[in-house]
Image (cartoon, rainbow, N blue to C red; front, top):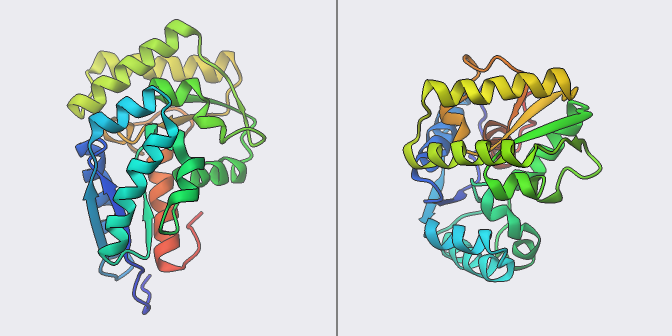
Amino acid sequence: MTHDAEPKTLGLVTGLGVGASIFYYRSLVEAHVARGLTPHLVMVHADVSHVMELAEARETRRLAEYLAGLLKQLAAAGADVATIPAFSPQVCAEELDALAPLPMISLLDAIAVEAERRALRRTAIFGAHVTMQTELFGRLRGVTEVVPLPHATAGLVGDIYRKIVNTETASPEELEALRSLAHRLILREEVDEILLAGTDLAFVFRPDNTDFPHLDGARTHVEAIMSAVTGSPREP
């Protein structure tokens, strides 16, 4: 399927996990090419250590101000819209909305819309500690019931995820631990799907190797970005 109209110029805040940035870049380029389009992209590199320090300390105002500064650079470079392809910085989403100089393509909104479309009743979250602790920063409230993981289990998932972020891979044992947990949650807790709420989980859980019902947050976000920059409806 091709489109004659040129896509909007997308501003991408990268560096919040180099591997995750590469995943988004590759996915967006492939999605544009599949539509017969050339992507219009501008990027800025964030200081991931600074962002994570502020996110973990819940210094949401300072984090929003820092990210808004990066968005201003993207606006100056010609971006029409922008997005932040990482979960932890979403802790300041509310404050950032008020400061952003560009229309934002929200990662959290993309996931909430998809969860509602799928009519998910009960969901469990795999991702970074802050993402699980805040139940996707409260964005799923009223959309689906989030089943909290026991403290030790959440710690295990968060630790595995941190390693994936650092190494861009997971050992067979770590993959099996996450798979087994997913199946237990679906069977025992009647969870409809596991929300993969970590961009770097896309490295290890792909459509061809994920054997449990899931909502892939990063891939869902890529689809929402493509809809926003091309003006075309999201593919079902």
